[in-house]
Length: 395
Image (cartoon, rainbow, N blue to C red; front, side, top):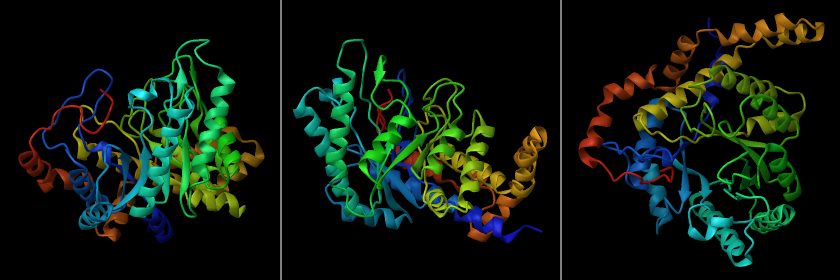
């Protein structure tokens, strides 16, 4: 018989989808326009509402500024509510404008730095208007050549800019600082690793936390260990879920290394039950957000598949026999401890998830439900094919 406590924890999970995942998007080389891809923030919210109706666990939508800027935020919130969703994290854009060629918050020019600071402060004001609790910040700042700029000066300028931004954060809004170990700065990246992001967040204050993008790591990096370190220091703020084969590919989460995704959730689930209440509270407050560029795959089906993959990894992590695992670890029984994890990972959780979805009042198979709904075909007829490149700068 299914443990109702497991079902309850499965259905407690919330995953935020990104507005930019519903529009035409691609790689550095090509954007393939798809019929029905969302052309406006209103259409993105409609698609996000459909994903939430199918899955039951995606009630918020991350937006990107200025891509999703509108004149009337109250009206947009009403549009979102009409589709059964709310506006989630606000993502400032500090990488597309020509002025940011040499950086934004770390730029040599104090005029450009001030412009970048003001943009993030503007995003904080938007967050207040729409009821968002998260500013999700990624910077493309870095250098391409040795000698291009003074590395310590860039670090100081970055910290100074972030302090100005942090000072404008009201209570209840968190600043999640994302890192990326390389690209687009090919010589140096100003936020290259979790340690740098952690140090900056600790300097700023308790409302600043680290955001882990699962695609922003070098080959062989142990992401679950990074998660464990940040949890133990109560500074893990959230995730941008995607997957990568070589670099920041923004593939469907869990598509290339599902075992890694399971191991990440293993750390998160264990931390939720931690006796240290500070660690447990951090784990329970993690923001789970998707950040993907759906290039050749259908937009809505890709998003639903991402959510399903996240649910699958999470459900398997809930099945880990913690008592048996701790006993094996304490005894130094290496293979037994490993088998405990493998037993959970190899479990078929599809019946468990089907039951959980029934209790949420959604279809047990969200992907099949989408395919049978006629929604994709309808919006393709109504919207046609938008020009390639709308909604995402990956081309």
